[in-house]
Each structure stands twice: as structure tokens, then as C-alpha cells.
Amino acid sequence: MTVAKNQERERPLEDLLEELHPRLRGVLATFRIPFEDAEDLLQQSVLTFLMKRDEIRDPGRWLVGTLRNRCLMYWRAHRRRLYESVDAAILESVAEPEQPAQERRALARDLSGVLGQLSPRCRSVLKLRYGLGCDPAETAERMGYRSSGIYKIMERCLASLTRRLIAVGIVDRESAPGR
Image (cartoon, rainbow, N blue to C red; front, top):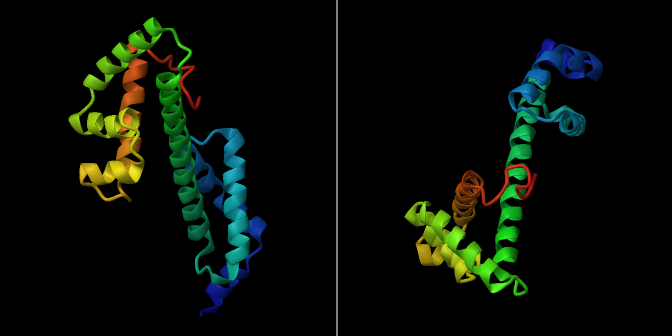
């Protein structure tokens, strides 16, 4: 390894962070990470950097790339929590036995109308998953998908359903699950 590369790796962390500050802020701004979460993501990236410092060839590039990956994972987890909460809310609202029959019929009619606006694939996936109570693996098998890919399909279908529910006013944007 060259002397310049060794010096780059041996450089104090404070100097590296000061040099990378505009780029790191740019990554956080590009991904629109909320201020309260941005510091945590940066700290996680720096901590990982410190643990793997001896293995890293280009510390600046590695740190920026790691922060970018953490930002991607942050939003994926955020979306997943939203869809899972919609998932739970749908199951709860459909399964509640204490609701008056008129409210259940109105909710079923509204859901049916919104489901009718979805693509045939999404309607089938949601019907199998929630209407018939199939687990994800069984849903994948019945639809002819790999079980590893059904989660992404279900996530997209739930996202589409959530957008439609908000658009028709069944679910208020501010009170949508996961907000």
C-alpha cells in the first residue's frame, strides 16, 4: 500500500468528518431525513466506520456510501411500518365483532369500492391475504410467485390501497396509521 493511502487511513476522525461535512449533510438533505433521526444515522455510520477502519481503503467514500445506505434503510423501514400498521388496522376493522352491522356493511361497501379500483393482481393478493386469511407463503404459492418476492408485492398493494383510502376520504391523511 502506498504511503499516501496509509496516511489517509491514519488521519484523525475529526479531520475526516470536517472535510466530509458538506457531503454528509447533502446526503441527509437528499433523502429528507428528519433532523431528529439524521444525527442517529450519522452516529451509526461513524460507529461502524470506527469498528471497520482498518479494513477500509477509502474512508471518505466509504463513510458517505454507508450513510447513503443507512438513509435508504431508514425510509424502507419507515414505509414497512406504515404498511404493517395499515395491515393491522384493516384486519382490526374487518374483524371487530362489536361494530354495529350497519357500520360493518358501510365499511365493507367502502372497502369493496376502493378494492375495485386496484389492479387485478392487487385485488387477488389482498383477497387471499385478508379475505381468506392466507399467510404470505400460501398467498405466494396460490398466485404463482416465489415466497421471497410476495412481501414486496404485498407492500406495493398495501401502498396502493392506502393511497386510495386517503384519496376517497375513508382514511384521513393526518390520522393514517404509521403517522
